[in-house]
Image 1 (cartoon, rainbow, N blue to C red):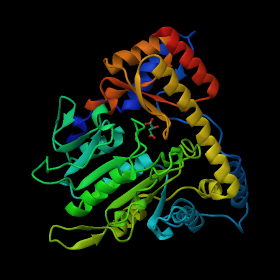
Image 2: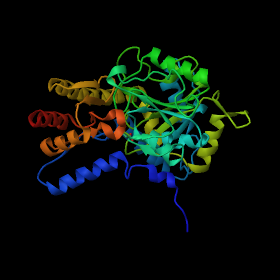
Image 3: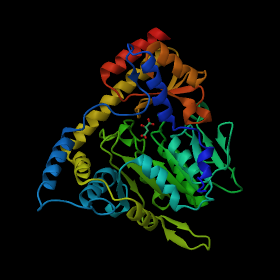
Image 4: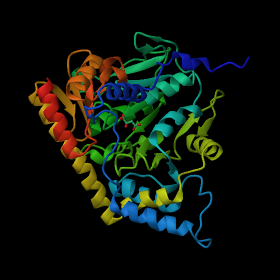
Length: 412
Ligand code: MLT
């Protein structure tokens, strides 16, 4: 009889946000007269920037005529988008990234999950806790961990993010797991779920660590557009030497409201190498190109045009205004939860507010849902160190956020 990939049996029965959606649906079915406000999953609510809508219309028009019709696009994405990214997101910030080091994709979730398949099955991992669950679950699926004991998978070096380190982990001082230093290190700043940001010095210490140990950093920078504090890096390539040790993931989902439209990208510098078992160096860029050209057929032409439009002057203004709008919500949430007596982090350079509720996070989730009809995300869903916290997302209308905060104040 055909057998399953048994590594899947090590996982929790369902993905965190599917689990929450099911609980909320059950609540709504039982309480049809009580409208729920969702501040759980970070899903945008505001329309696409007008420049992207115009670009979508124009690109759809091109598909209506044989002369301008497009079939399969270039494997790494259209040059017009990769060049706009290289200029707008990197050259403008002094980061040495070339257009042909950028791979356009349909989402950072897929990219973060898929990238690990080009590395060896016994690669040693370091992953923050709490963390966006995709980094952990995809490695479990690939068989890179042992079983889960008490909320921790065997074979992962957990980088604990707690109030003691302001939720920014430092590189390990000694190899912890599997008899050697971690070889693949996941980092995310501004962080999901804590909203914490890393300073230049903190990121530089990770780059130095990766260079010293020949590790690769997988840097998820999906929320960089929310950074407002001067001096906080938006890309790991702002750190000298990062090109030799880091892959960066970015997304248009939150920057430009593309959660449903789907467009993201990965940067893999051509200087980045990893070794085979005989010690020979291989280009990671070449491996990823091989993987993508075999398993992926790109993002649709109109969507890539819509993404490229945000690099125009009008597009930059519109996306900045969009992120500022959500940051306005974040400031209201952080202020209201602080006033209620909770210690909060995030919500300044990030759309997420991480709240130390000092009690069981699923219990707090149930309390908010039942008493205030507000959905948050329980911290335990992001890892063992997330227990005692909840995450509130700023992605919603101003009206809903204000109403949610009034309901929470009344309920607590
Ligand atoms: C989140 O709520 O953590 C994000 O929306 C998840 C995602 O981007 O996939």
